[in-house]
Length: 252
Image (tube, rainbow, N blue to C red; front, side, top):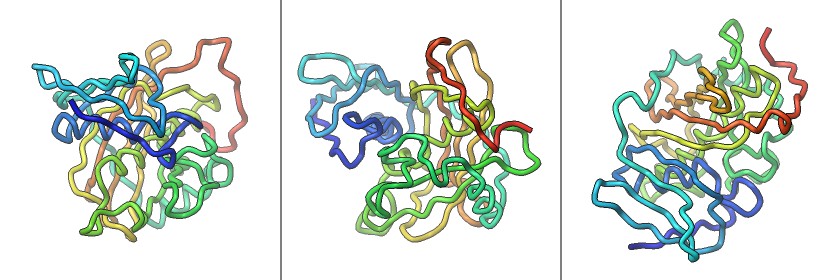
């Protein structure tokens, strides 16, 4: 038994942890490559209990014993194969057209909020790739030294955080409607990104089954080498709760 404590800096919603970040923490508990499922909000600035089962799974519970998240080692096929990325210059240009370049998908979120100071949040966002299917999007992430290990590379939970919200943005850009909350995230960091270097973020909306929306998000270096990749399941809001929004970059 060990503890997990998430500082408020790594929030997603105002009082709970960013989904990608906590999924990364859970994946590290099962060896680094894994599938994490979020069961309830993980409150920030509080200690939670991390335990392991006999089958290699990890479980996160709060002080009252409520199950917050689970993780298991990565299964074959859990992460979709990423399409070829655009160039860094193209990714930067596509990101500039994103509705989230000036207005955050989730205000205050560690992963995507563009209003947070550089080095205090990640500020990752993506925009529609010109000529690609609707919901195939790209952007750029420059990891900040504030988050780096002693060797200048990013801890895996930070990279998982950087892969988070772009999967939701891809669906938002495709449909003009928010898809809800991150439910499950499978991921693998193949090579830790370096602070101060630019990386291409590629996100693509896949299929949906009822209220489940499947996305892939991958990170590439400037030569097109895959640094990290993920498969995500977003849980859409009930039909009456979804509020359509206007998006200039929605499917054409």
